[in-house]
Amino acid sequence: MESKFPLLSIEQGCMVSKDADITVAFRVELPELFTVTSTEYEAMHSAWHKAIKVLPNYSIVHKQDWFIKEDYQGKLSDGGLSFLARSSERHFNERPYLHHSVYLFLTKTNKQRMAQQSNFSSLCRGHLLPKEITNKDEVMKFMEAVDQFERIINDTEQLRIVRMTEEELVGTNEKGGLLDRYFSLSEEGHASLEDIRLGADLVRVGDNMLCLHTLSDTDDLPTTVSTDSRYERLSTDRSDCRLSFASPVGLMLPCNHIYNQYLFIEDSDVNLERFEKQARNMHSLARYSRSNQINEEWIQEYLNIAHSQGLTSIRAHFNILAWSSDKEELRQIKNDVGSALALMECHPRHNTIDAATLYWAGIPGNAADFPAEESFYTFIEPASVSLRQRRTTRIRSLPSVSRWQTAFQENPST
Image 1: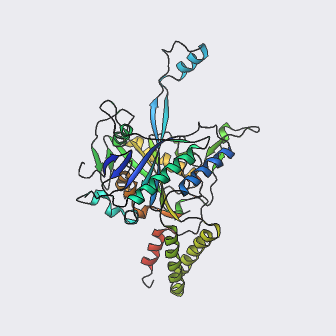
Image 2 (image 1 turned 180 degrees about the horizontal axis):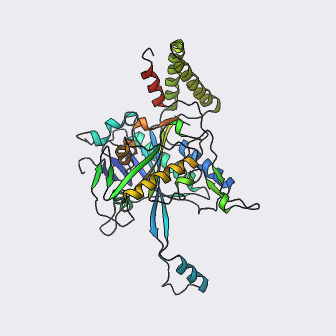
């Protein structure tokens, strides 16, 4: 485990990987459930959009929402409670609920790392050689952008992000940190290292068996998505209760799980130039295959929208990591996650091939180890990462990398 561990140290509040990736970690404070209006959802979306735009090329935004089953501990010994408050505490005492905690990781990596695939994960390499961070100007530029990002988010009334300290990340002798928590998939304060099995057939952390559902292709996504929707169960003719688009895989999903959201900010101009070249290649070969003609139309539509609306070309990925120590319960959890994704009009894709790699990439500070083939190309406005106001106006004909690869494989003449 020590030889494979991807993180090197924490320097000046930043997590530094053995591949010289730099990550700044935040705790995120979000509004209470059922208290946000549609206008406020739009305002939060706008804040995420503005903040993400200040990050430099080859940055990664990784938002990690934890939902852990816990029993409510009532404040029954508090002598200052009123009769009604004490009755409320007694009513909810020891009742199960989902404890929601949110973390945000901003990572600066490089072009080569961002393009690597799962067969080049740190899990597959025999040696990890630390290398010096030689370009100090790039580091300073990234840290300045992180400061701007923090100010933009904290200027909103609905959101707040707080930088995590070294003790919160690695823990102390008395209390485990976030890394301990991730490697044990348990509540805060758990600092013991569990046995971890990262196999092709099973990923297990301690007694907990993992299941992973991914949204890594445009075919998995709905045609259109708004920031929020009406929650009918608590709405009336005169009142409107709003929830985010992603709420079915959030607090509405009653099991232990983590919702991971990734945005990979590449050089947009380089991406668009590459797509222009691919469109010309598809056009010249269109007479040999209808697939090439269709692919050309997809790429042209993507380019037209990018240029006409001034949008930035990025890659995105979303996944739900759930777990249980009971096989029967895990089977039910798989069904529940699939149903939750279906409620979002997404195509449930149970990922068994890259589960170990995606779990490893989800280590706080290790987003640069994410396999590129598990992401799809989109734009910053559609892919904003707030759990409660994620917005995805999907371009149905937007091609993914895997679809282009399939087209080439099916027709050797291309």
